[in-house]
Length: 390
Ligand code: RFL
Ligand code: PHB
Image 1 (cartoon, rainbow, N blue to C red):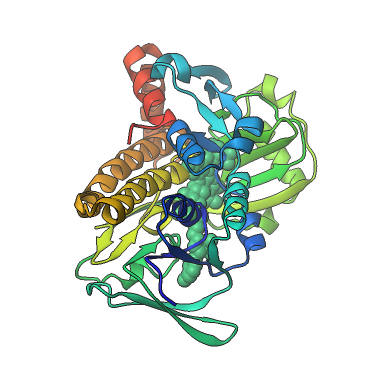
Image 2: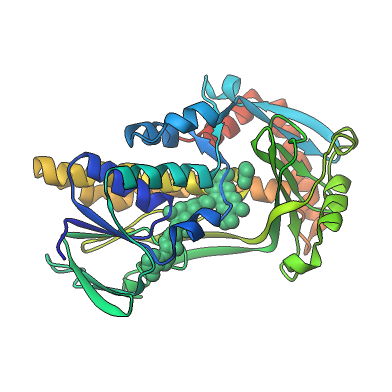
Protein backbone atom coordinates (compact mmCIF):
# COMPACT_ATOMS: atom_id res chain seq x y z
CA UNK A 1 0.00 0.00 0.00
CA UNK A 2 1.06 3.59 -0.60
CA UNK A 3 -0.19 6.75 1.09
CA UNK A 4 1.06 10.24 1.84
CA UNK A 5 0.87 10.16 5.66
CA UNK A 6 0.90 7.01 7.81
CA UNK A 7 -0.50 7.68 11.30
CA UNK A 8 0.37 5.26 14.12
CA UNK A 9 -2.28 5.29 16.88
CA UNK A 10 -6.05 5.74 16.86
CA UNK A 11 -6.46 7.75 20.05
CA UNK A 12 -7.79 11.31 19.86
CA UNK A 13 -4.49 12.68 18.42
CA UNK A 14 -4.30 10.23 15.52
CA UNK A 15 -8.01 10.34 14.70
CA UNK A 16 -8.12 14.14 14.76
CA UNK A 17 -5.12 14.47 12.43
CA UNK A 18 -6.49 11.81 10.09
CA UNK A 19 -9.82 13.63 9.83
CA UNK A 20 -8.30 17.12 9.34
CA UNK A 21 -5.88 15.91 6.66
CA UNK A 22 -8.61 13.99 4.82
CA UNK A 23 -10.75 17.15 4.71
CA UNK A 24 -7.80 18.92 3.03
CA UNK A 25 -7.36 16.11 0.51
CA UNK A 26 -4.18 14.72 2.10
CA UNK A 27 -4.24 10.90 1.87
CA UNK A 28 -3.59 9.02 5.07
CA UNK A 29 -3.81 5.58 6.63
CA UNK A 30 -4.18 5.12 10.39
CA UNK A 31 -2.95 2.00 12.22
CA UNK A 32 -4.38 1.14 15.66
CA UNK A 33 -3.28 -1.72 17.87
CA UNK A 34 -6.65 -2.30 19.57
CA UNK A 35 -10.31 -2.51 18.52
CA UNK A 36 -12.46 0.61 18.34
CA UNK A 37 -14.50 -0.70 21.31
CA UNK A 38 -11.36 -0.97 23.43
CA UNK A 39 -10.22 2.57 22.58
CA UNK A 40 -13.68 3.86 23.51
CA UNK A 41 -13.74 1.98 26.81
CA UNK A 42 -10.85 3.98 28.29
CA UNK A 43 -12.17 6.69 30.59
CA UNK A 44 -9.78 9.61 30.54
CA UNK A 45 -10.03 13.35 30.00
CA UNK A 46 -13.07 15.42 30.84
CA UNK A 47 -12.10 19.05 30.38
CA UNK A 48 -11.63 20.45 26.88
CA UNK A 49 -10.08 23.86 26.26
CA UNK A 50 -11.47 26.25 23.64
CA UNK A 51 -8.51 25.65 21.27
CA UNK A 52 -9.42 21.97 21.12
CA UNK A 53 -13.09 22.79 20.66
CA UNK A 54 -12.19 25.00 17.66
CA UNK A 55 -10.24 22.11 16.16
CA UNK A 56 -13.27 19.84 16.61
CA UNK A 57 -15.37 22.31 14.60
CA UNK A 58 -12.67 22.53 11.93
CA UNK A 59 -12.73 18.72 11.77
CA UNK A 60 -16.53 18.92 11.32
CA UNK A 61 -16.98 16.96 14.54
CA UNK A 62 -18.20 19.65 16.91
CA UNK A 63 -21.96 19.28 16.56
CA UNK A 64 -22.63 16.85 19.42
CA UNK A 65 -20.03 18.52 21.65
CA UNK A 66 -21.94 21.78 21.09
CA UNK A 67 -25.21 20.12 22.05
CA UNK A 68 -24.13 17.88 24.93
CA UNK A 69 -20.91 19.46 26.27
CA UNK A 70 -21.24 21.77 29.26
CA UNK A 71 -19.60 25.18 29.20
CA UNK A 72 -17.87 25.81 32.54
CA UNK A 73 -17.00 29.35 33.57
CA UNK A 74 -15.16 28.38 36.74
CA UNK A 75 -14.21 25.70 39.27
CA UNK A 76 -13.60 25.45 43.00
CA UNK A 77 -10.55 24.79 45.09
CA UNK A 78 -11.40 23.42 48.54
CA UNK A 79 -8.63 23.75 51.09
CA UNK A 80 -9.12 21.86 54.35
CA UNK A 81 -12.86 22.35 54.09
CA UNK A 82 -12.98 25.92 52.76
CA UNK A 83 -14.36 26.39 49.24
CA UNK A 84 -13.03 29.18 47.01
CA UNK A 85 -14.10 29.69 43.42
CA UNK A 86 -11.84 30.43 40.46
CA UNK A 87 -13.80 32.52 37.98
CA UNK A 88 -12.15 31.38 34.75
CA UNK A 89 -14.18 33.65 32.53
CA UNK A 90 -13.49 36.81 34.49
CA UNK A 91 -9.84 36.07 35.17
CA UNK A 92 -8.93 34.86 31.67
CA UNK A 93 -10.58 37.73 29.85
CA UNK A 94 -13.70 35.89 28.71
CA UNK A 95 -12.60 32.29 28.02
CA UNK A 96 -14.28 29.13 29.35
CA UNK A 97 -13.73 25.36 29.12
CA UNK A 98 -16.05 22.60 27.93
CA UNK A 99 -16.78 19.51 29.99
CA UNK A 100 -17.11 16.76 27.38
CA UNK A 101 -15.59 13.32 27.89
CA UNK A 102 -12.69 12.00 25.85
CA UNK A 103 -14.80 8.91 25.15
CA UNK A 104 -17.54 11.01 23.50
CA UNK A 105 -15.07 13.13 21.59
CA UNK A 106 -13.24 10.03 20.33
CA UNK A 107 -16.57 8.50 19.30
CA UNK A 108 -17.42 11.65 17.30
CA UNK A 109 -14.05 11.46 15.55
CA UNK A 110 -14.56 7.74 14.78
CA UNK A 111 -18.04 8.46 13.40
CA UNK A 112 -16.68 11.22 11.17
CA UNK A 113 -13.84 8.99 9.89
CA UNK A 114 -16.27 6.19 9.17
CA UNK A 115 -18.67 8.52 7.31
CA UNK A 116 -15.81 9.78 5.12
CA UNK A 117 -14.61 6.19 4.59
CA UNK A 118 -11.27 6.99 6.20
CA UNK A 119 -8.69 4.23 6.02
CA UNK A 120 -8.40 3.04 9.65
CA UNK A 121 -6.85 -0.37 10.25
CA UNK A 122 -7.44 -1.84 13.70
CA UNK A 123 -5.86 -4.73 15.58
CA UNK A 124 -2.45 -4.35 13.97
CA UNK A 125 0.60 -5.98 15.56
CA UNK A 126 4.38 -5.74 15.29
CA UNK A 127 4.37 -2.20 13.91
CA UNK A 128 7.91 -1.29 12.78
CA UNK A 129 9.02 2.06 11.34
CA UNK A 130 11.68 1.97 8.60
CA UNK A 131 13.82 4.47 6.66
CA UNK A 132 12.78 7.43 8.77
CA UNK A 133 15.74 9.58 7.69
CA UNK A 134 15.30 8.69 4.01
CA UNK A 135 12.80 10.36 1.64
CA UNK A 136 10.98 7.00 1.39
CA UNK A 137 9.98 5.83 4.85
CA UNK A 138 7.72 2.80 5.26
CA UNK A 139 5.87 1.00 8.00
CA UNK A 140 5.44 -2.74 8.36
CA UNK A 141 2.91 -4.52 10.57
CA UNK A 142 1.00 -7.76 10.87
CA UNK A 143 -2.75 -8.03 10.53
CA UNK A 144 -4.53 -11.39 10.69
CA UNK A 145 -1.09 -12.98 10.83
CA UNK A 146 -0.11 -11.51 7.44
CA UNK A 147 2.79 -9.07 7.10
CA UNK A 148 1.82 -5.77 5.46
CA UNK A 149 3.76 -2.73 4.26
CA UNK A 150 2.76 0.90 3.84
CA UNK A 151 5.03 3.26 1.86
CA UNK A 152 4.56 6.92 2.68
CA UNK A 153 6.11 10.40 2.79
CA UNK A 154 5.68 10.97 6.53
CA UNK A 155 5.04 8.85 9.63
CA UNK A 156 3.12 10.37 12.54
CA UNK A 157 3.76 8.79 15.94
CA UNK A 158 0.47 9.32 17.80
CA UNK A 159 0.64 5.99 19.61
CA UNK A 160 0.61 7.19 23.20
CA UNK A 161 3.19 6.83 25.96
CA UNK A 162 3.73 3.08 25.46
CA UNK A 163 3.81 3.17 21.64
CA UNK A 164 6.64 2.19 19.29
CA UNK A 165 7.18 5.52 17.51
CA UNK A 166 9.19 7.33 20.16
CA UNK A 167 11.26 4.16 20.69
CA UNK A 168 12.19 4.24 16.97
CA UNK A 169 14.29 7.37 17.54
CA UNK A 170 17.92 6.48 18.33
CA UNK A 171 18.83 6.93 22.00
CA UNK A 172 21.70 9.29 21.18
CA UNK A 173 19.25 11.72 19.55
CA UNK A 174 16.28 11.50 21.90
CA UNK A 175 16.48 13.23 25.27
CA UNK A 176 13.83 12.27 27.81
CA UNK A 177 12.86 14.35 30.86
CA UNK A 178 10.81 12.62 33.53
CA UNK A 179 9.39 13.20 37.00
CA UNK A 180 7.44 10.50 38.81
CA UNK A 181 5.15 11.43 41.69
CA UNK A 182 4.89 9.17 44.75
CA UNK A 183 1.14 8.57 44.36
CA UNK A 184 -1.60 7.82 41.86
CA UNK A 185 -5.26 8.74 41.24
CA UNK A 186 -8.05 6.24 41.75
CA UNK A 187 -10.94 7.25 39.50
CA UNK A 188 -14.58 6.17 39.76
CA UNK A 189 -17.32 6.77 37.21
CA UNK A 190 -20.85 6.46 38.54
CA UNK A 191 -24.31 7.03 37.14
CA UNK A 192 -25.21 9.56 39.82
CA UNK A 193 -25.99 13.27 39.84
CA UNK A 194 -22.71 15.20 40.29
CA UNK A 195 -22.26 16.70 43.74
CA UNK A 196 -21.44 20.11 42.24
CA UNK A 197 -22.27 21.69 38.88
CA UNK A 198 -18.62 22.87 38.71
CA UNK A 199 -15.45 20.86 39.37
CA UNK A 200 -14.01 20.85 42.91
CA UNK A 201 -10.25 20.29 43.40
CA UNK A 202 -9.76 19.40 47.10
CA UNK A 203 -6.56 19.76 49.07
CA UNK A 204 -6.79 17.74 52.28
CA UNK A 205 -4.46 16.30 54.90
CA UNK A 206 -5.62 12.78 53.93
CA UNK A 207 -4.72 13.47 50.29
CA UNK A 208 -6.10 15.15 47.17
CA UNK A 209 -9.60 14.54 45.80
CA UNK A 210 -11.40 15.78 42.68
CA UNK A 211 -15.12 15.98 41.97
CA UNK A 212 -15.70 16.04 38.22
CA UNK A 213 -18.48 15.03 35.88
CA UNK A 214 -19.39 13.96 32.40
CA UNK A 215 -23.01 15.15 32.42
CA UNK A 216 -25.75 15.95 34.93
CA UNK A 217 -26.33 12.20 35.38
CA UNK A 218 -22.76 10.93 35.20
CA UNK A 219 -20.15 11.75 37.86
CA UNK A 220 -16.40 11.25 37.83
CA UNK A 221 -14.52 11.33 41.15
CA UNK A 222 -10.85 10.81 41.96
CA UNK A 223 -8.83 10.34 45.16
CA UNK A 224 -5.07 10.38 45.64
CA UNK A 225 -3.82 6.94 46.70
CA UNK A 226 -0.41 5.34 47.38
CA UNK A 227 1.22 3.72 44.35
CA UNK A 228 1.12 0.34 46.09
CA UNK A 229 -2.73 0.29 46.15
CA UNK A 230 -4.72 -1.73 43.63
CA UNK A 231 -8.33 -1.40 42.43
CA UNK A 232 -9.14 -4.49 44.56
CA UNK A 233 -8.08 -2.54 47.67
CA UNK A 234 -10.91 -0.08 46.98
CA UNK A 235 -14.40 -1.59 46.94
CA UNK A 236 -17.07 1.05 46.18
CA UNK A 237 -18.02 1.61 49.83
CA UNK A 238 -14.43 2.28 50.88
CA UNK A 239 -14.02 4.72 48.01
CA UNK A 240 -17.12 6.75 48.93
CA UNK A 241 -16.16 6.86 52.62
CA UNK A 242 -12.67 8.13 51.81
CA UNK A 243 -13.93 10.67 49.26
CA UNK A 244 -16.42 12.08 51.78
CA UNK A 245 -13.70 12.47 54.40
CA UNK A 246 -11.71 14.69 52.04
CA UNK A 247 -14.60 16.91 50.91
CA UNK A 248 -15.84 20.00 52.78
CA UNK A 249 -18.61 18.89 55.17
CA UNK A 250 -21.42 20.66 53.28
CA UNK A 251 -20.35 18.98 50.02
CA UNK A 252 -19.91 15.54 51.63
CA UNK A 253 -23.44 15.83 53.03
CA UNK A 254 -24.83 16.29 49.49
CA UNK A 255 -22.80 13.54 47.81
CA UNK A 256 -24.97 10.95 46.08
CA UNK A 257 -23.20 7.60 45.90
CA UNK A 258 -23.93 4.60 43.70
CA UNK A 259 -22.27 1.59 42.11
CA UNK A 260 -19.12 2.36 40.12
CA UNK A 261 -19.41 1.65 36.40
CA UNK A 262 -15.67 2.09 35.88
CA UNK A 263 -12.81 2.18 38.35
CA UNK A 264 -9.15 2.60 37.44
CA UNK A 265 -5.81 3.81 38.76
CA UNK A 266 -3.52 6.24 36.97
CA UNK A 267 0.03 6.81 38.24
CA UNK A 268 1.08 10.48 38.05
CA UNK A 269 3.95 11.29 35.72
CA UNK A 270 5.52 14.31 34.04
CA UNK A 271 7.44 13.42 30.87
CA UNK A 272 8.80 15.14 27.75
CA UNK A 273 10.78 13.66 24.85
CA UNK A 274 12.85 16.00 22.70
CA UNK A 275 12.98 16.51 19.75
CA UNK A 276 9.50 15.71 18.48
CA UNK A 277 10.82 15.15 14.94
CA UNK A 278 13.29 12.59 13.65
CA UNK A 279 13.72 12.70 9.87
CA UNK A 280 10.25 12.06 8.47
CA UNK A 281 8.80 10.88 11.79
CA UNK A 282 6.78 13.42 13.80
CA UNK A 283 5.62 12.64 17.35
CA UNK A 284 2.33 14.02 18.70
CA UNK A 285 0.37 13.84 21.96
CA UNK A 286 1.12 11.33 24.72
CA UNK A 287 3.76 9.67 22.51
CA UNK A 288 5.97 12.69 23.22
CA UNK A 289 4.74 14.11 26.51
CA UNK A 290 2.72 13.25 29.61
CA UNK A 291 1.42 15.49 32.38
CA UNK A 292 -0.19 14.60 35.70
CA UNK A 293 -3.93 15.12 35.19
CA UNK A 294 -4.27 17.85 37.86
CA UNK A 295 -4.20 20.71 35.35
CA UNK A 296 -6.42 18.94 32.75
CA UNK A 297 -3.74 19.58 30.11
CA UNK A 298 -2.89 16.16 28.54
CA UNK A 299 -5.42 15.92 25.75
CA UNK A 300 -5.31 19.66 25.28
CA UNK A 301 -1.54 19.56 24.71
CA UNK A 302 -2.06 16.78 22.19
CA UNK A 303 -4.49 19.07 20.36
CA UNK A 304 -1.95 21.85 19.89
CA UNK A 305 0.56 19.35 18.43
CA UNK A 306 -2.11 18.24 15.98
CA UNK A 307 -2.93 21.83 15.07
CA UNK A 308 0.73 22.58 14.23
CA UNK A 309 1.18 19.30 12.33
CA UNK A 310 -2.03 19.65 10.36
CA UNK A 311 -1.02 23.11 9.14
CA UNK A 312 2.57 22.04 8.48
CA UNK A 313 1.51 19.02 6.39
CA UNK A 314 -1.19 20.95 4.52
CA UNK A 315 1.34 23.70 3.66
CA UNK A 316 3.78 21.02 2.46
CA UNK A 317 1.25 19.38 0.12
CA UNK A 318 -0.68 22.45 -1.01
CA UNK A 319 1.98 25.16 -1.19
CA UNK A 320 5.27 23.26 -1.26
CA UNK A 321 6.13 25.16 1.91
CA UNK A 322 8.12 23.12 4.47
CA UNK A 323 8.66 25.83 7.05
CA UNK A 324 5.91 24.42 9.33
CA UNK A 325 7.52 20.96 9.26
CA UNK A 326 10.93 22.45 9.99
CA UNK A 327 9.75 24.46 12.99
CA UNK A 328 7.26 21.84 14.29
CA UNK A 329 9.36 20.37 17.08
CA UNK A 330 10.48 23.71 18.53
CA UNK A 331 7.00 25.26 18.29
CA UNK A 332 5.20 22.26 19.79
CA UNK A 333 7.75 21.88 22.61
CA UNK A 334 7.50 25.56 23.59
CA UNK A 335 3.80 25.08 24.38
CA UNK A 336 4.29 21.57 25.81
CA UNK A 337 6.74 22.84 28.43
CA UNK A 338 4.28 25.53 29.53
CA UNK A 339 1.65 22.82 30.09
CA UNK A 340 4.29 20.82 31.99
CA UNK A 341 4.99 23.76 34.29
CA UNK A 342 1.32 24.40 34.96
CA UNK A 343 0.46 20.73 35.61
CA UNK A 344 3.47 20.29 37.90
CA UNK A 345 2.50 23.43 39.84
CA UNK A 346 -1.15 22.40 40.28
CA UNK A 347 0.00 18.91 41.36
CA UNK A 348 2.52 20.24 43.87
CA UNK A 349 0.01 22.70 45.33
CA UNK A 350 -2.84 20.24 45.91
CA UNK A 351 -1.44 16.79 46.79
CA UNK A 352 -0.12 15.35 49.99
CA UNK A 353 3.58 14.53 49.72
CA UNK A 354 4.30 11.56 51.99
CA UNK A 355 8.03 12.29 52.35
CA UNK A 356 7.94 15.88 53.61
CA UNK A 357 4.31 16.53 54.57
CA UNK A 358 4.91 19.50 56.86
CA UNK A 359 7.24 21.45 54.60
CA UNK A 360 5.13 20.87 51.49
CA UNK A 361 2.00 21.71 53.40
CA UNK A 362 3.37 25.11 54.51
CA UNK A 363 4.35 25.99 50.97
CA UNK A 364 0.95 24.89 49.63
CA UNK A 365 -0.79 27.14 52.14
CA UNK A 366 1.32 30.11 51.07
CA UNK A 367 0.69 29.32 47.41
CA UNK A 368 -3.09 29.19 47.95
CA UNK A 369 -3.13 32.33 50.12
CA UNK A 370 -1.19 34.18 47.47
CA UNK A 371 -3.41 32.85 44.70
CA UNK A 372 -6.63 34.03 46.28
CA UNK A 373 -5.17 37.41 47.29
CA UNK A 374 -3.82 38.36 43.88
CA UNK A 375 -5.83 39.12 40.74
CA UNK A 376 -2.64 38.58 38.74
CA UNK A 377 -2.07 35.12 40.23
CA UNK A 378 -5.70 34.20 39.53
CA UNK A 379 -5.24 35.55 36.00
CA UNK A 380 -2.22 33.32 35.48
CA UNK A 381 -4.06 30.21 36.71
CA UNK A 382 -7.12 30.99 34.57
CA UNK A 383 -5.08 31.75 31.44
CA UNK A 384 -3.25 28.42 31.73
CA UNK A 385 -6.35 26.37 32.59
CA UNK A 386 -8.42 27.62 29.64
CA UNK A 387 -5.39 27.03 27.39
CA UNK A 388 -2.56 29.26 26.21
CA UNK A 389 -2.83 30.46 22.60
CA UNK A 390 -1.41 28.18 19.86
P1 RFL B 1 -3.70 7.83 23.52
O1 RFL B 1 -5.06 8.24 23.88
O2 RFL B 1 -2.89 7.07 24.49
O3 RFL B 1 -3.82 7.02 22.15
C1 RFL B 1 -2.73 6.32 21.59
C2 RFL B 1 -3.27 5.17 20.75
O4 RFL B 1 -2.18 4.49 20.13
C3 RFL B 1 -2.43 3.08 20.20
N1 RFL B 1 -1.14 2.36 20.09
C4 RFL B 1 -0.71 1.78 18.96
N2 RFL B 1 -1.27 1.68 17.75
C5 RFL B 1 -0.58 1.00 16.79
N3 RFL B 1 0.60 0.42 17.03
C6 RFL B 1 1.20 0.48 18.22
N4 RFL B 1 2.39 -0.10 18.43
C7 RFL B 1 0.54 1.20 19.26
N5 RFL B 1 0.82 1.46 20.56
C8 RFL B 1 -0.21 2.16 21.05
C9 RFL B 1 -3.13 2.89 21.54
O5 RFL B 1 -3.90 1.69 21.55
C10 RFL B 1 -4.01 4.14 21.60
O6 RFL B 1 -5.31 3.93 21.06
O7 RFL B 1 -2.81 9.13 23.11
P2 RFL B 1 -3.27 10.47 22.38
O8 RFL B 1 -4.13 10.19 21.18
O9 RFL B 1 -2.05 11.28 22.22
O10 RFL B 1 -4.25 11.19 23.45
C11 RFL B 1 -3.76 11.67 24.67
C12 RFL B 1 -4.87 11.65 25.74
O11 RFL B 1 -5.43 10.35 25.76
C13 RFL B 1 -4.33 12.02 27.13
O12 RFL B 1 -3.39 13.08 27.05
C14 RFL B 1 -5.45 12.47 28.11
O13 RFL B 1 -6.35 11.43 28.35
C15 RFL B 1 -4.88 12.99 29.44
N6 RFL B 1 -5.92 13.34 30.44
C16 RFL B 1 -6.56 14.58 30.39
N7 RFL B 1 -6.26 15.46 29.42
C17 RFL B 1 -6.93 16.66 29.34
O14 RFL B 1 -6.60 17.47 28.45
N8 RFL B 1 -7.96 16.99 30.22
C18 RFL B 1 -8.33 16.14 31.22
O15 RFL B 1 -9.29 16.42 31.94
C19 RFL B 1 -7.60 14.89 31.37
N9 RFL B 1 -7.91 14.01 32.33
C20 RFL B 1 -6.25 12.44 31.46
C21 RFL B 1 -7.26 12.81 32.41
C22 RFL B 1 -5.62 11.19 31.55
C23 RFL B 1 -5.95 10.33 32.58
N10 RFL B 1 -5.28 9.07 32.63
C24 RFL B 1 -5.94 7.85 32.80
C25 RFL B 1 -3.89 8.97 32.22
C26 RFL B 1 -7.60 11.95 33.44
C27 RFL B 1 -6.93 10.73 33.56
C28 RFL B 1 -7.29 9.86 34.72
C1 PHB C 1 -11.93 14.33 34.58
O1 PHB C 1 -13.12 14.69 34.58
O2 PHB C 1 -11.61 13.17 34.28
C2 PHB C 1 -10.86 15.30 34.95
C3 PHB C 1 -11.20 16.63 35.09
C4 PHB C 1 -10.21 17.55 35.46
C5 PHB C 1 -8.92 17.12 35.67
C6 PHB C 1 -8.58 15.78 35.51
C7 PHB C 1 -9.56 14.86 35.15
O3 PHB C 1 -7.98 18.01 36.05
